[in-house]
Length: 264
Image (cartoon, rainbow, N blue to C red):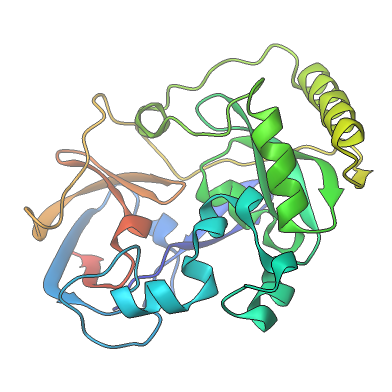
């Protein structure tokens, strides 16, 4: 199977992961022995061609050609659609020039983030958030990115992945109060920079992940050095598979790799 990322949905606050190939829930594999292997093949998810080297799932040519590989995807405040220089204007209209949400979430610690309105709650699950709440909506990814950069001066916009896979989550005494204060800050910054926003009602979403035990050490598996292994699957959080002996593997990191994941 050519991996892109783990797909998941929420049922009664419980996150359910789907197997990338088989039509079954990966949640059922928790605490079972799993065989994991990479055959050495890499395929660009942009052009579907076999490649010796890919970067986040894309070959060099696609990384230079596709709008989804542009720097502004990582740093939306650098969006240049309004300058008429977007690599793929139609893609930009459908993905960037759409309503985006500024949100507060708790991953390893409280953090600020942005995502396209249609990507909720997928974005929160991908980051391993245990709860999240929309704060405001903007008219575009660019406007959301500008606000995120300014808000990150007061509140982190990054997740500490080591703490995430160890289950080391910062305690928040009053999440509603924190959300109210952060939402007020969003409004202040938006007014200061004259960025139009729509304030959202503070409706929290809780997420419970299929994990029976977290890792004691923040160890990750490198498929380049360890392409085949058998281990017990302890749980799944965000895009990480947590294994009992070898540690965690970030599935998104290996986008485009031809992997086999099955019960041993």
